[in-house]
Length: 335
Image 1 (spheres, rainbow, N blue to C red):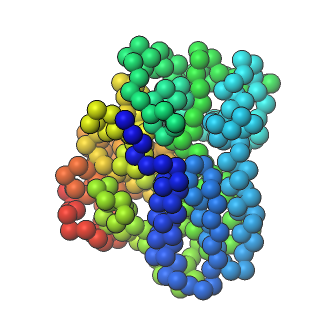
Image 2: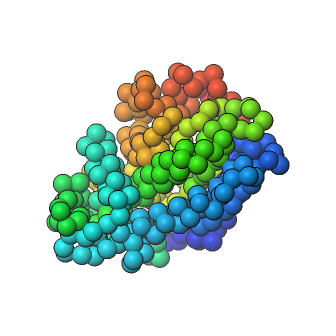
C-alpha cells in the first residue's frame, strides 16, 4: 500500500498547475500581481490588478480556511463534529451548511455528512487503507443531511454524523471572494484553488479567459482548453488523489451507496457557471460519480455548462461550449 503522492508533492503540483493556468489567463501581462498561499489543502493563487489590495482577498481565504477545515480543532466544522451539543458558528459557516443541505436535496450522491466514511478510508491522510465491510456499513449509516440539526443555540449533529466539506468548500470560498471583489470594484482577478477557480471581470488585454483542462492520463499536460468570460469553474476526477492497495487504485471521491471510492467511466468532469461557485464544486463531484449514464441530463442545463471526459478519451460538452473548446491532445475527440 502506498500514497499516490506525498503532501509536499501534491502542493508542488498544485502550484505548477495554478501557475500554468495563470500564465495562459494573464498572458504575462505586467499590469497584474500574484500571491500564493496554502489553504484548503492546496495552493491557492490570487491574481489581480497591480493596483489592487490583494491582502484583503488572501485574508478572507485564510479566515474561511480556519472556519471550514474538518481537521483544525479550532474550526467551526471541527467544533461541531466534536460536540454533542449545538455549536454557535460564524454566519458564513451557517450559510455554507444550509446551502449544502439544499444542494444535497437536489443532488443526493454528494453529501457533506460523509466525514466518517472519508476518515475511515483516509485516502489523503496518514493511513490510507481498505476498511472492513462492517466498518463501511457502520459509516454509511451516519450519512444524511437530516442528521444536521439547526437550533436557536447553533448547529448540532445526530446519529454519529461528521461534517466534511471537501465537496464544496472551495466553491463556497470563491462565492465569498466574488462578493468582496464586487464590493471593492475590482476590474480583474483570477482566484484558483487548483480544482476550483473564479475568473473575474475582464483581462487587461481585453481577450477571453482561457482555461486548460488536465489530461487525466497525464496531469502534467492539457487535454483541451476553452474560452470563457467571467465565471466559476470546478473540476473533479480521481486521477490526482488516490492510493493503491493490492494493485487496485482507490480515489478520494466516494460512492455513498456502496461506501467505496466511486467506480465511474468518467475520468474528469468540469462544471462552469456564471454566478454560482458552490454549485460548480458540488456538481462536478455529483456528475463524476454518476458517469456517462446520467450525464445527458446535465448537458442541457441552462444554469451551468459541462465538459466531461471518459475512459475512452471521449469529450462530452454542453452545446453552447463546443465552439470555444480547443483540443490540445489528439488522443481526445468529441463524442
